[in-house]
Image (cartoon, helix red, strand yellow):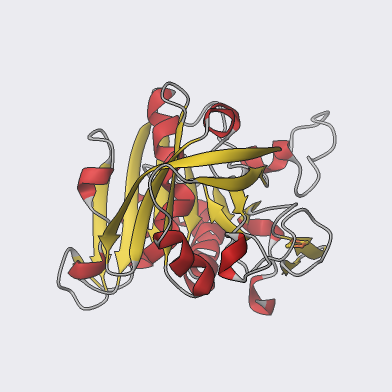
Length: 284
Ligand code: FES
């Protein structure tokens, strides 16, 4: 984790109320992994005290540029849209635990609902760089809210679902998952909690639907990896990036906790990425 003065180099509105900003921040661009986030201090003159957390949308070590994709939801994000090119922001990061891809996985399914694209976008770059195939399933209210395909790498298969049927599949993005679950070695998702809960439910029944035999653990295979460990997450079929209001973002205030099957989990420290089986979904 570093404290960085990140210089804004580009700022544009890509969808109604949604912005994409590029910052020159070489220390973050080289040290970040998909799923991690930064905590941004808003300007002193804004009258705001708390930093604001943002997923790292992309990070390019070659240029030293990271991008943040956010929606204007209040004074902090509105202030951010008024920052001018050349201004420097105080950014703390990278924070949180990243997505963990099993080295054996060749086909990655990324599922995003709305602004959840910001949570999984960087994983597409990492996966393609490592020679993997990527399909992104994206859900939005309607065509006017669909993340532009021009902002995605050409190699990605991009499949859209809209609630009103104005583009792509008419319905929820979770309804597309059954078509891809046999192809996918692993799935990674970010979006509203009901979407993630439904994906977790689908992931639970996947092996049975695909007819994968339950063989149990091999004799002498040793202990199972503890829930929440990097090794256990790497083996999980579904990992989710949880969006939660944050205070300190470094594990101190407990303002970001969600209920896990073994007790409370801090989204900023134990997450924001979790294996789906770590979360007590009915309690959310
Ligand atoms: S935001 Fe303070 S513990 Fe997570």
